[in-house]
Length: 448
Ligand SMILES: Cc1cc2nc3c(=O)[nH]c(=O)nc-3n(C[C@H](O)[C@H](O)[C@H](O)COP(=O)(O)O)c2cc1C
Image 1 (cartoon, rainbow, N blue to C red):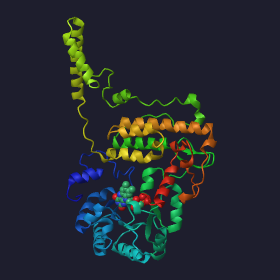
Image 2: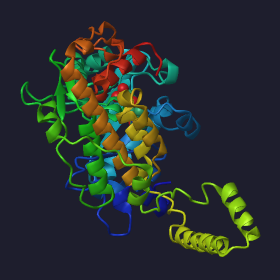
Image 3: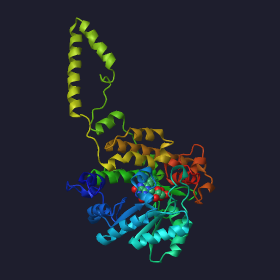
Image 4: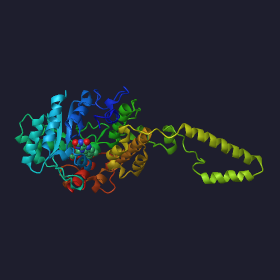
């Protein structure tokens, strides 16, 4: 599809839009290095598709890992695993005919020896880097389980030392990266779900005493990047790179040391204010659309009146109705949002705010009401998030002992506390690490 249809290309890779506008995908100032991944089973078709993107990226990657039904039906991703001849041709054709390197992402097979042979075949075909997901094809949904880093270590030891290998699987929080590099000997790690839930996953914690306003560290030394800080950065990226405008000026994030005078309470927008911000009319108290039956009844009864006041009222109501209609025409249905970045925002924000929305239902409800492209509604979610974090910080400062947590032995990641064990804990409003903990557990118990 990518090779055949300009419309499909433009919809899935912004650099290929023909409107000449600045693009997000592959923008040399902020979106490089970039690998563009394809799934395919036809070498010529893949080459044609790859040629379209090669000017805007640093490598083309072949997806050999997708285990989903759609990949099974289309015979691509991990369902090519049994067809090494096709995989070899796909990669070799790219290597011989592209101006940029080709890489591949594979899953482990049922034995480490077979996985090694498979990796050798991919490298022989011409892949410059292999990313190895330490789960087998059947490990998905309820059967996801843990990735097997020991097979990756075996590959590292058996493959030529110059082979560049990235490890994938089980990276749920910052500290997992080091454990993974150590356990596998890989040259880098890749994280998908961990990164979705916590976009700060690759950011090192600041030194003690230099937390600033974006990082929170509790009195026990544990901490994480603040949910409000991450959401602000997210929103600023959307303003700047999706909407193409300067992000709003923002007051510094709240810190307990600011004192209450220095930090005016955040006032979430009311529905009316929000509507105004969105360019719509705020709902009026006596809006006839809101109470149609009553209004109708009123004007009918006015017909029966013989005094002038009733007639004036009726005329007023008519005029108001006409005005309203004109306005509603003016603000006719908003255009359908097609920008993939805007469409993805709600699901992404739910991932980012997952630890917070379970307690702060106002944030959850405001986010649930956000429509694609309604940036002001998302700004309101940010305001509510800032308020929730402020509340958590103030409560923590007032009584840190109430937030005492127990070591989470089940997480397998050692030093992460589990706030879910704390009654009335609100430090999930502040930091991210508990998301990772829950995830570790879910993954371990195969619930994912
Ligand atoms: C929402 C989502 C979308 C994904 N899309 C792709 C994809 O397009 N290509 C791919 O190779 N893997 C894809 N994956 C799989 C990840 O790359 C990764 O192999 C897998 O999630 C295991 O890594 P993790 O434990 O870091 O999540 C996706 C995963 C998620 C959660």
